[in-house]
Length: 164
Image (tube, rainbow, N blue to C red; front, side):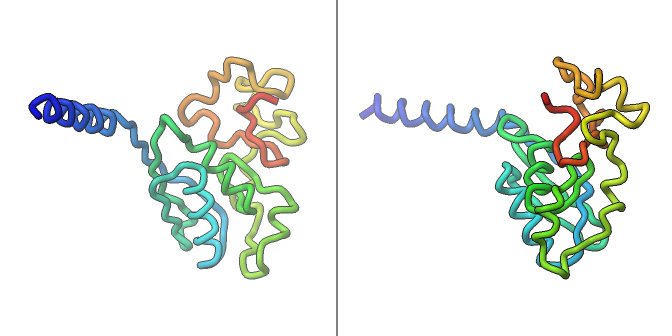
């Protein structure tokens, strides 16, 4: 009986230690959209990509997210949102996914997407040139650490800072 108590106590300690070391990150991301229907789709897409908390504000066009950095990241969340039709700071939705949005969800695509630096796989902005070599991100992808890749997205919706 004493061994069982020690085992259960040890197990509980290990579980709490694992939870305590989880690295939760919080970020605010710009996401285009128009209405309550957009809000639901954006938040659902963020959560499907690993966000444990996702709230999009229709007025500011900002998505506040929290996620475990061991299992997700901002790029993964933004890519998921772009896949359902909404442009983000780093990912542009494909024409097909944008066109599949309900008519009330159609937004001005130049508001966020104009910040992209890669068009047709080629770097078009000076600040992107240090990130890319011959129009493709460098293999070590050091330029993608932190916020350095915030506006590096291709017109096809794929991040500049991803291996081509």
